[in-house]
Length: 85
Image 1 (cartoon, rainbow, N blue to C red):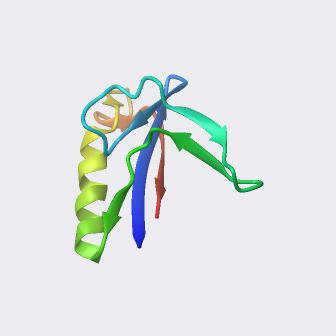
Image 2 (image 1 turned 30 degrees about the vertical axis):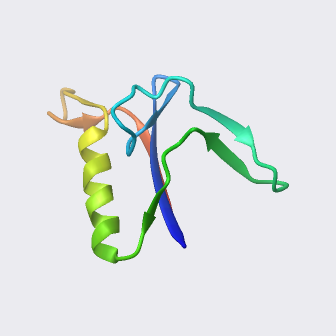
Image 3 (image 1 turned 180 degrees about the vertical axis):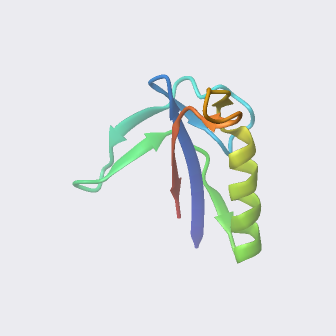
């Protein structure tokens, strides 16, 4: 079973880019039960079976990312994102 998740860190807030539109409040990074691992509690994880589904989810997440205009770029990303497979 292969699952993907996609999160964004923006203004010190973790947002779930594959979630149901919630702002991401309540998501926290915690130490996982497996020693040395970390997890984001409440982050959406979607099972994928094809590369096409992975690409579809990446496109969806990119649409949900925070962007704003800067002097150098009209649609600059103002965040960091993490895609996990």
